[in-house]
Length: 611
Image (cartoon, rainbow, N blue to C red; front, side):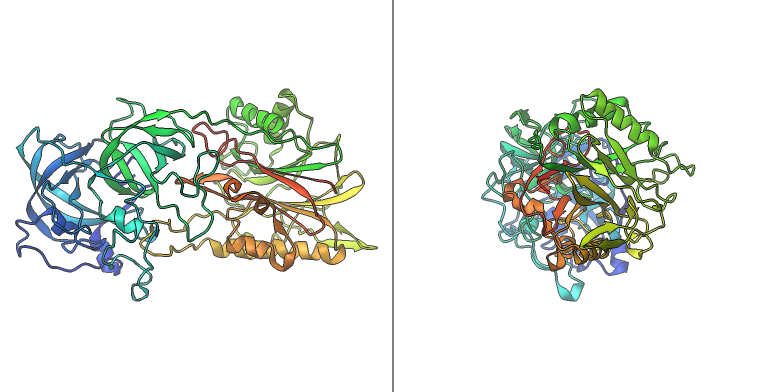
């Protein structure tokens, strides 16, 4: 991970390539024509891009405030005598590539090249990190006091997130003068490389496998009762979020495990970095102590005997090679936390040998191992239906062939089998005397539609509960891969993946409208990993014409989330209802997304209603 922790996928682009592409703009001015006598604030300048980008500088002095011996190796220096301009940072990262030989408190003089690295590459849209590369370092003295940290707090971070990008620069904010008192992104950028400090702060993103967590310095900002901070619109990005990592190698000091709602207590202090996987990051020299606030996994209510309970659950690339412990944990959740729903739509069920790319497409062994685990956990003997995909045509891990699967409890609900369904045959809508039916059940919706290229096709099934037909459509829409992050230099960020999900939503909406055209009061549930927010264009397309209602909107705003990403609690998984479903109870069952120990990265959703 560039300028952060090691990740093999990390890519960095040097400023010369960026300048050639016209994506970064900086002036050629300097405090000295030969690059000598330049101060750190001269290098940082008043915009996101150094006015000295690409130039050689000599004699840049500062005190070492942090040393990173792993990942993107290097150290930070800070000028102990700042200028009076709040837009110019006094800190700077020195990229050494090899393990640095300096120590915190060393006073150094550095010669090197001013570069702007774009973590993730130019195509990522990420902002760049100003740094010195190919350095020649001279230690002037040792044991100096580290410059006092700048305290990042609720009152110091502005409420507005970012300025609007310059239309003349393709929506980029790179060339705009920083306004650290007006915009949160400008404030953080004005502290890039600076020694910063936060006090006791609530955890809003659990410790992840890469030894990082997220806190907020704004306790009240879109807070919910479980301790998270909810992402409720594209205009409300939660400005108080900050990623925290440790400069101490994990082998030397394990990174603490924290869940959402815990507190990182005491002072956490170190240089402010910028990286590909979260943007502005406090790389801690001194790390606070995690205080466990006892977050517990939720349990939903059991359905009444006259209620049909339908759930959706992304089980994160489940295949028989996964340890039995994963199957057991997922099964226990279905039985205990979800109260064994009548119908469970599963996403990310892989084929019988997982990501081994040998042409296998059947998932019978995967599903049997899961349903057996449910029985062992005290649950019902679920039956199941699905449609095997064509090999490597539905996205996901190559060879994994993920698909949606219906589990159903035959003691409570029956499945109406209508033969003929396969990977390429579309199910349709038929009807007689005002009663809609599927031509193929289980079947796929419009699999030849270009909207589903390299993506999971919707799985439609016809069920009967207490004599009433219920149609369930299980979905796993295209991922957000390729979208720019909210810390992009484009503001607003480019969200290119939305185009595909929009087409997918339109296809599903059209199919639902066909059902309702035959049977106006048909019970239809559209469920699954929609991979988009309840306020998104994708959801608006699904609900077009009143065909569907996003049931998550029946919850209080603070409860609307199924996933936590970069400290934002947000909606990705949804259940949408047709107009014939007048009364229902909806529950986003929080058992995974807020926890350091996860069985999946998604929270399941459950809806109960009386057909």
